[in-house]
Length: 172
Image (cartoon, rainbow, N blue to C red):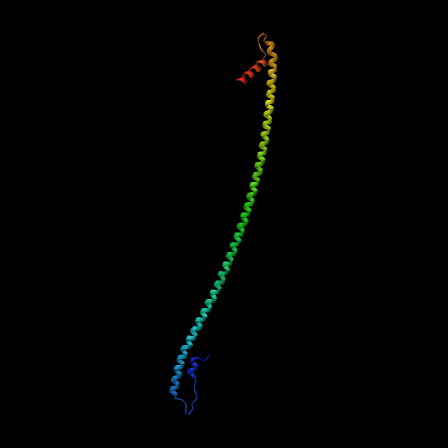
């Protein structure tokens, strides 16, 4: 590429009928000045272009970094979501197992209480039967002893008195 210095230092050969040297020199000086201006402007534009290229490269790196961060955030969110889902499923299963344990324990306790109730009822029946037997034996003993202890023509036996009282009580 031609530089402004090349233009200024260019020496033309002389010829007999050549151009006016002063005019050529003035023209070359003007061309060199204009060319220098354009050359500097071109260099400035190249520097600006290089700076812009560097900024673009920096923005591309930043964009890549942001894209990677976003992908990592999405991946992390999915992992957290999956972990939370697994944990909630585990908690539900544990809760269901605990409920089933409580139900089984309650069924056992209910069955135990039902057996105790049945035993108590049987004991109550046995106690009533024993009490009846004792009362019946005492009544029989009383009946046997009363007629011999009291001798009177108009007296009734205790069994008859009890039967008469029961009949009178039901008739009312």
